[in-house]
Image (cartoon, rainbow, N blue to C red; front, top):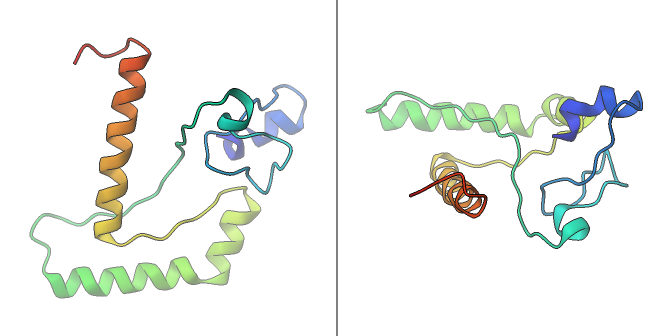
Length: 119
């Protein structure tokens, strides 16, 4: 993850070879995507999610989702993330579940291709 490595990259102690993302990171526009650099169409990255307990009443889940989206949409949050080189994508509970399922399947395929999984 380039944002996490920013300090050592900027100090000249490391060099970013590519980002595992569908597009270049605006904070590091000279770093190619993995697809551009190696022809590998693969994307992964850091994500943040909030979960509630099983059986959470729907009215509480709806209120929590609205509150979280308000924070996500705020200029303060957008500026905080952008200034640190992180992108953001909003997703509600269903979108997060789909994202997690897709990421799990992709990681499984990558691990099999690398010989790290026998299943």
